Amino acid sequence: IQQLLDEALRDVGHRGPRCVGCSRTDAGVHARFFTAHLDTTMKRPAQALLAGLNAKLPAQVRVWRVSRAAPTFNARFSCSGKTYRYHIFNGRVLPPFIAPYVYHRRGCLDLPRMAGAASLFTGEHDFASFTTSEGRKRDTKRRLDECRLEERGAILVLRSEEHTSELQSH
Image (cartoon, rainbow, N blue to C red; front, side, top):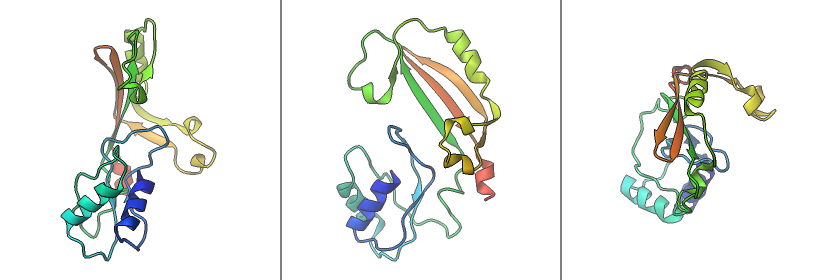
C-alpha cells in the first residue's frame, strides 16, 4: 500500500520524502484501514490531493481522507492498535467473488477446539518463527489482547487484536 501511495504522490507532484505508513502489508494481505503521514511542501488543498491520489491509485486502493496532522503525529508510532482478521470459507463451493480474500477449507472443522486454540494466542508471545531472518532483527514479541474465532455462516473469522501502547513509546 505504501509503495502505491508513494507512486501516486509522485504523480500528483510530491517531490519530498516517502510517506510513512502505520504498518507493512505483505503480498496477498489486504488492509481495510491504513493510516499514513507525509511531510510535504505541496500547497494543494486537501480535497484536490484526495481526488488526485484516487485518480492515480488502482481501483482496489482508495484514500478516504486527507487532513493536516499535528506535528507530533507519526503514523507508525502513534498507532494505538491493530486488528487482524483471517477468513476461512468452510462451504462446499467457494463463491468466486470472495476467493481472493478467504482460505477455502472443505470438510468438517472442530470449531470448539479451534476456538480454544485461538484463545491460547492471547497474551505476549514471540512470533519470530513467523518472520524472515531479516525480520528477526527487530522485536518479534507481540502482546495480543484478544484472539477469538467468530462464525459468520460458512465463513469463520479468526480475529486478533493488539493494542500497541508500546508503539507510542518509540
